[in-house]
Amino acid sequence: MKNKTALIFGVTGQDGAYLSKLLLSKGYNVHGVKRRGSTLNTYRIDDIYSDPLIKKNKFYLHYGDVTDSISVFNIIKKINPDEVYNLAAQSHVAVSFEIPEYTTNADALGTIRILEAIVRVNKKIKFYQAGSSEMFGKVVEKPQNEKTPFYPRSPYGVAKLYSHWITINYRESYNLFASNGILFNHESPLRGETFVTKKIVKGLCKIKLKKQKKLILGNLYSKRDWGHARDYVEAIWKILQHKKPDDFVICTGKQYSIKQFINLVAKQLKLKLFWKGKGINEKAYDQNDKLIIECNKKYLRPSEVDTLQGDYSKAKKQLKWKPKININSLIKDMISYELKLLKR
Ligand code: NAP
Ligand code: F7E
Image (cartoon, rainbow, N blue to C red):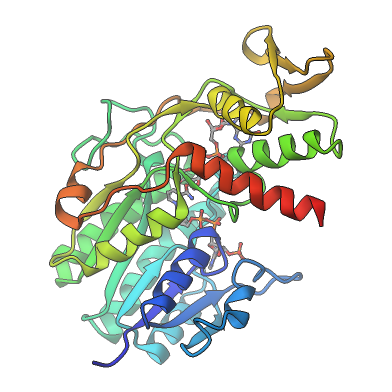
């Protein structure tokens, strides 16, 4: 049987890197769309070229941008892939308040550009849309599943909700195999530097090695359902292999606050933390009473998502998917990557 061809928008991001490697290991030809930047942005996927196990397969990169319908259409027409994964997004919730128009253009309209191109080029191309638990926002029930009503709380969440519904609309209107993943937070050593887990792991590793004095964060009390990106790209792939197009919540079902996450990281690093104060004035000190963590209002958002906790029963039943990596193993993986880099 001929190897399948996949096209990934957002190939240079965290999930793009893990998904590329997963698909290559399954024998796919993988095409990825990267943006032109003034600095190189391929550090997460550069190792693909040197991996002897996946070298024999094919991996190609194309310049493009989901805000540019000409590039989107031309790439889809040229590759005519079996599967398209739309992972491209301005993915930072706080930043979406600073650049709401661009976020909407990329995260909402980007999706319809891809869907339109699929309709015009080949309706048999399967499509995956990277939806987010941010669409649940100010949650109306706990835990959240595929039937939970949405209530987004940021330009990012609202843009993702447009993409969610336009994917369903194109599925119903044109009979496309178009599916939504509703993924809860997932992290890894390749997580972007300004997301809270990476910031905490990197900051505390540097503090442990005396390369940084303190870490400045925002809201310590919001709660998230954190999984590992390696597990979640497996779910993304399974969603497109399912017998019919559908929408799936992907999560761990477990929830921790930012403060609990900090304490788990500190424990693995054998850093003793002593918390004092409340709210924005809460601070953490080491055993010598030296300030290690403080909060600053500049990291608070105009509206916050206080709590997220998912229910992956549908994915478990229909996709035979469940998360394999727990929070402590995720943290261990992130710490070991960071310490290796810092000791280099
Ligand atoms: P990420 O690391 O921020 O990667 C985003 C990718 O999109 C990068 O490759 C980025 O390119 C690319 N991109 C941004 N704007 C683009 C544009 N205008 N045209 C083309 N490409 C563009 O995000 P991630 O964590 O891998 O997440 C992947 C997807 O899942 C995103 O859509 C995100 O919103 C969604 N999601 C993520 C999570 C999570 O917890 N990680 C949860 C739910 C949903 P550059 O490298 O050039 O910046
Ligand atoms: O924030 C709080 C912050 O930026 C998590 C994206 O992948 O997951 C991600 O969005 C929480 C928030 O992720 C800092 O206020 C405290 O409550 O790591 P985050 P996010 O906003 O949950 C969803 C599912 C996506 O789809 C998104 O693409 O942590 N927090 N102090 C902080 N957050 C940041 N970034 N920095 C801080 O200093």
